[in-house]
Amino acid sequence: MSSKEPGARNLARLAEAAFERHGDYVSLVFEGREHRSGELHERARRLGGGLAAAGIAPRDRVVVMMANCAEVGLVYHALWRIGATVTPAVFLLSREDVRRILVDSEAVAVITTPEFLGTVRSAAEGVESVRLVVSTGEAEAGAVALAALAQAEPTEIVPLADSELAALMYTGGTTGRSKGVMLSHENLWLAGRIGEDTGYIPGITRGLTALPLAHAFGLLVTVVGLQSHEPGTAVLMRWFEPTAWLELAQEHAVQISAVVPSMLQLLLAQPLEDYDLSALRQLACGAAPLPAEVVAELARRLPGVEIREGYGLTETSALVSSNPPGRVRTGSVGLPVAGTEVTIVDERDRELPVGEVGEICCRSRMVMLGYWRDPEQTAEVMRGGALHTGDMGRLDEDGYLYVVDRKKDVIIRGGFNVFPRDVEEALLEHPAIGAVCVVGRPDVARGEEVVAFVSLRAGYDTPAGELEAFGKERLGGYKYPREVRVLSSLPFTPVGKIDRKALRALLAAEGGAT
Image 1 (cartoon, rainbow, N blue to C red):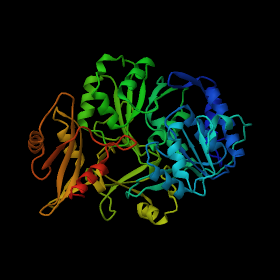
Image 2: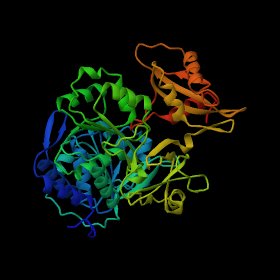
Image 3: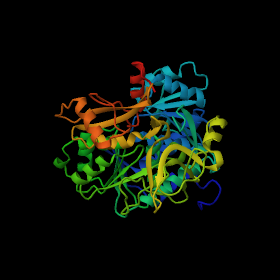
Image 4: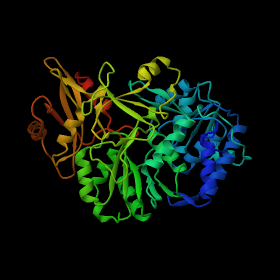
């Protein structure tokens, strides 16, 4: 079937085509066990039959709340085969958050792993739409075993239009309130194809994945794998742990890995030189800004490894721009990918010239269908036909995009804009600081004041006053933090970003909230 024919961009057909193209080979390694593509493909076909027989119909939403494991990919494929909508939930969500997703999406089923079954059952209690709970473990009260469902007869792929829902992904989005982002089969099909074409280097076939597969970036990595030009082996981690990452990279001669900045900062705290990482050629980094100091340190300690930053949002199927292999521009998140137009606009949506900072807007066929049952918010972020990302950035003369900060995170001190990322990068030049997050605190005289939360590298006990003086020396004027707070560790979100909201809440509890 040509990719231009109606329904040809169905992700179930993509998975089928990938198997037909590459055949049977070791496609996944998880916790020491090798999984062959033929085995996984057959299990997905049979699981689809079992889920359909259990009453899941085309267009039903099914929440998938699983730790990374071999079953995640085949669950996605099985649901797409029967025309259902995958609704991922990051496994670290609270019971209340899971319940909100179940209620809002009107999910008919939840698929989970044993360690989260208690949370799922509690969250689903009293939610009328939920008729089925499936666990990858043994069958028990209130839950069906996934293995039993995967014994069913395979079903044919349910034909759906390219424009129909493939995934409903809950995110804070561009306005802070959790909402469902509607991504079509075509959205994700294109993101996978363009992502593979943009980063393809012949011979790179061994990757290491530690990202939550329930996150938009993790889902993109999954779909990119289905679009791969060469058969490759993915080494999957249940969750990221720096020592285990290094051991796996060495054991499997990993050539590429998709990461977020916090992972790289944790890796830099390890004795990288004690591991054989000679096969490693690329680290693809996204989901949050990557401090320049981290890039410089990685280049020093991992010479020959290319750090390729990219940029995307859940609303854009996790892809807007990427640094092409061999043409990386340090500090930039790369060039807009094929079929994507990026503009920088001011507060009145007027396009700004090259070099000026404004809100990043984009147009592409990877942009979401809209927010689930929220036409007002959809219209607001899609005004003028372009997605308003809520991120501040600029373009250089060659079209490379630079993300400056989140629009809502900009601190306005005495009428001047302070971009937290500028302050964070300056503070990271201090040898004692391992991680930093800058937020604003209300101030009667200045409107907002700059506050930096930091954690120190092992072996350092540097007082806050010294760090404040360092910030003043590096930044001066209105930018430097008037207050530096040293914490034993900074809080992180379930997808590995520093949790800025939690730090604001800490200030709020003291009567100094933003």
